[in-house]
Length: 114
Image (cartoon, rainbow, N blue to C red; front, side, top):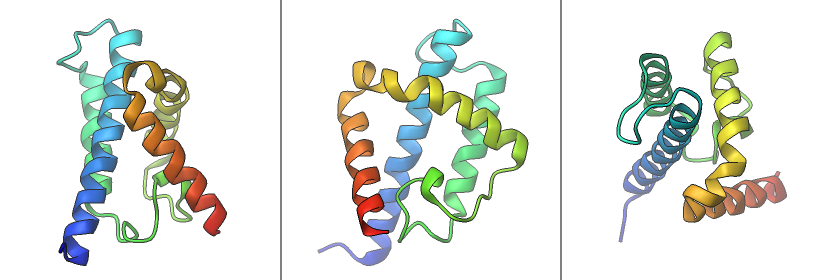
């Protein structure tokens, strides 16, 4: 049986994977990069998002940063990640359907609980 800390770490890693995939998709389609690399701007955003997720004290209770009451992203980075999410969100169904469905189910579940 997994400990609570292991569950939180697993959740953190999954969130980081989803964000990385969304940034990768955005970069590939908007900056014409290959699927295995990011442009410097998107790489910076991906690293920043990863660091924020690592330091998140609310990981146990929240599902995604968009649903969090405390925004730990700097305003500039928050706007950049919103742009990526608006672009990549709908396209995730085509490129990563399992991640997209997981994200949708978790978001709806959290909205019901609040």
